[in-house]
Structure formats: C-alpha cells, structure tokens
Length: 441
Picture (cartoon, rainbow, N blue to C red):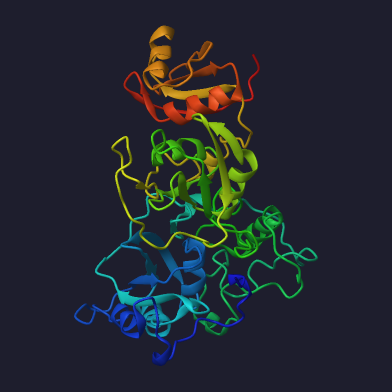
C-alpha cells in the first residue's frame, strides 16, 4: 500500500468515468449529490468523506481546508460509516472557496472522496481540543514566548513547508491553494518518516507561533494522536487483530478494559465467521504499536490471547455483521465518543498514563471506600482472581473525588485477568478505573 503522505499532488477532481465506490459509478454520484441548494451561503461547511482508507482527524481536515482560507474551528465525527467534519471559517468567502474547490476531490489517490456542502449550523461548539475537534480561537493554549529559530534542524520536517500545516501562524490563508500536497514530505528528508522527531518539530513550530502569533497551538506527539509525521503504510495501521478470545468469556468491553491502558480505542467487534477473533481500531497507529509491544501475547481468561497488527486494514470502514455473544452483549461496540473511558483524549490525561508491561499490582482510582472483604467479593462475583492484599490511599485534603489504592495479586496474569473483568466496574457508587502499577510488594 502506498504511503498516503507521499502523494505529491493536491486534491484533484475525479473524472465522472472513474467514479467508483463499491456501489459503482452511480453509487458515488449519488453520494456527491448536494442537499444544500436551498440553504443560504454559510461560513460553516459540512464535509462528508466516503471510501476512507486512511485516518481522518483534525490535522488532516485542517491541511485540506487551510488551502481555502483561515479556519476558526473544526469538529470531526463518524455517522453511518461516513466520516464527517464541520469546518468554521473566518469568512464566508473562504467557505465558498472550500465548497467550490474541494467538492468531489479525493484526499488521497483514489480514496477518501469528499462532498462539501453548506452547514445549517450558525456556530460550532468545541468542548475540548483534541484529535477530533479543535478551537483555533482559544487563546488559553498559546505557547510561551521562545527565541526565534532561523533554520530547521538537519533532516527534520519543516513543519510548515507544505503550506497546509495546521500549526502555521495564519490559519492557512487563500495563498496556499497551490501547495504540493497535504502530506508533502520534506525534500531534505528522503528516508522513511518516524515519530521520534515530533518533540523537536513541535518545539520549532511553537517557536514560530510565539514569534508570529497564532490562534491556538495543539500539542503534537504520541499522546494526542496528532502525529505530524507518521507513516501509515509502513506498519502504521490503527487496526489490531485479536486471536484466542473465548466468546463465552469475552466481549467488546473486556477487550477495551485491557487496551484502553495503551491508547484511545475507537471500535471493537467480534468476527462471526472467525470464532475467537476480534478486530480493534485504535485512534492512532502509535496506540496500536503500544498494544503489540506491551501486551502482545498473554494468557488471559484461560486462553492464550495474541494481538497483531492487521495486514489488510489501516482503519475499519465497513460495518460488520452484528450478533449477540453468549453473554447477551452485542458483538460490536463503538468507543469513539466514550470520553469518560478513553484515557488519552487530552494531553494532561495522557501524561498520567504510564506505558508498562503487565505487573502483579493494579492501581485503582475513583472508588468509594468499602470493606476489604466486600471488595474481594466483588472480584469473586465476576469470576476474577481475588487480590491477596489491598492498600487504600488516603485522599488529599479537600478532595471531593473518589479514593484510590493498590491491589496486589499472586501474578501478573492474575492482575491482568482482574483488570479485564473489573476495570470500569462500580466500587461503591462510583465507576472505578484500573491500570497496572510499578509498585512493589
């Protein structure tokens, strides 16, 4: 599969003879039929993207739309197997330009086809800045003052060289309509791109922004999913395959309970035609890498469970067959909007999560204080190994949140099984979260 970032041309209109998207020429023509003809012109556009074969997030949408003009806000979401984005421009002229120039284009070669319409919305609301939404007018996240940088580091990504980088100072502007590509590689850097340079790159970008002024700078790096130089084709898939899952014991939530320690989980579904197999979409390839590195293959709930990268999928775009698992739960669950469960939504959240191999100690938090024997009984009721020792941590003075503590087990396997079965269960009246801890006996 070709690297999406290597395409060296801007989005181009596809000839009608080439329209094809599973449903054939007329299927795509039907998708591209606009429904906004009776709506008044608006500074907010709705972009619908079909035949998605590469991840679409705030950064990608910004790179697309910055060619048309200065952007205020972006919100992305998924509906009926179609990725959609609402983009609020500073001016009606910019929105008009985006609607006229981007409609019918492919983001990448022969995939990710866009329909661009006026939105009915009068203003976008962004609750938090993350990989799915961003408010570029938010002054509270401006970077601190830094000394101006004259040259880029040798071999590094220029950060704004393509003209469409979401971190550029002027929000894109109309002058970027002639940029080479949305993921153009730095001509000084001919080798495969990696994520290791993100910290240096972000430092340079922040320097430029501090010197020139900007409407908000999102944090880049492995914790945010807004990786600026990630190679999605060279082992960079968001999709994991899980093998060895006993459908009598497992369901999507139990898979999530384990994998959420290593990154944001978008979707989990069990495959009806492949017993014991599930597919998982993480929100970023980095998170999928974390799972294969820190979990990989492990004895869980009585079976050897193995997590591998998918060799066929970069992300999950097809709706699978839904059916009931033996425990009565659905074979499919979408965690995309589970902001209270995914732990890497915000940068401050992500910093609290340590990447580690399974240990024999679990840290739990947001729990009500109950007797130790009651807590052990909760584990027994779920068929989970019971902790051999429990240590409650005293709450901070004035704290109104739940309590935290440590659960000690005989082995890392017992702790992992306890995590799979008890993470996101109620301890008292509170939904309690758990994770592996480096604490010693």
